[in-house]
Length: 304
Image (tube, helix red, strand yellow):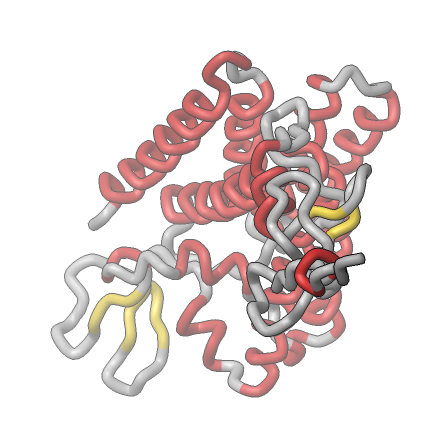
């Protein structure tokens, strides 16, 4: 009887397609390439390789909210915004001059002594203009991340505390409804719109605070609730308290900033909520862009 050849019983040695030095006898059930234990991804039947898993993930349609945003259970943008506000507040504690340098100011004067003065036309040559009128447009957003410093007493601390509490409660809901990208656009446009109305009505007033953006979130909460068909009894009560607070706080806070944020946030959310489904993203982007251009135009026309 002839002896059986060793080559007939010894299986062919294969190596992982991603790790050529690692022997393996397991293949991807989708593409059949050999994969080692480090590359095996458990599937409904057998194992898949990392490339097939990535390709499969790309082909899965992402879940979307009613407003077109990606569904997310973690309000990451709200966390980041709160973190930025707190970081800015801590920076104020270390360097109080940050408020004067980055707070929202339409037009002011810096004297030869370095002090800040109210803007008046025909000012002496030793003075120079500061604020948005001097091209410091960044103030229209940086001011929304600053708050009254601790030197203002208890109210200075309450200012940032109340705003962060409101951002935490409103932001988590609105971000879940809109998705992260649309929510961030809403927040920044509301903050910008808040500063624009301050510039138009009270340009010589230095204002700080996230209140304008928070009022924009309040408007968004109301619009999205109606769009989703929610029970409006609780929402209406919330908005009544919200508007009552805007009236009460007008005596010691910037009502212009609050109103500007409220109106801008409402306009943005209406565009996001009622854009036609067939070309929703295009219409939403165009509406936000048009609103931004309008706000910029109003600011430019106001320039002294």
